[in-house]
Length: 136
Image (cartoon, rainbow, N blue to C red):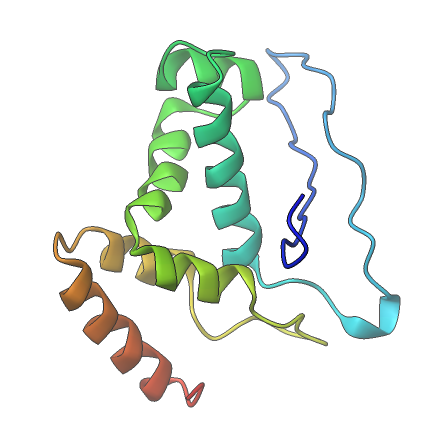
């Protein structure tokens, strides 16, 4: 791993129809630090899924969904986060843990930003969203 790299590990909860072994161990975060925002966790999951596809461990989204115990629809939602501009992804991955409650930016709003084709426009929408939620 790179010196500045962060590692986010998570457990998937497969559907009862699929019994896949858990691949990840718990995250090593001090209890007082809080939890990583859900958007950070889901983006890390999307990047992991992308890597699984790149390595050829799954042929396509349908195969990946079956292997990881998520629906194809949910997998498509998760993978939309990989459409975000790289600098936005990096910012999301480095969000600080939240001591309590929910992070003000939702996964749904990030998927909406991912639907914008231009990275420049994505950045403008992202900055507006951060300003709106007093995160700047």
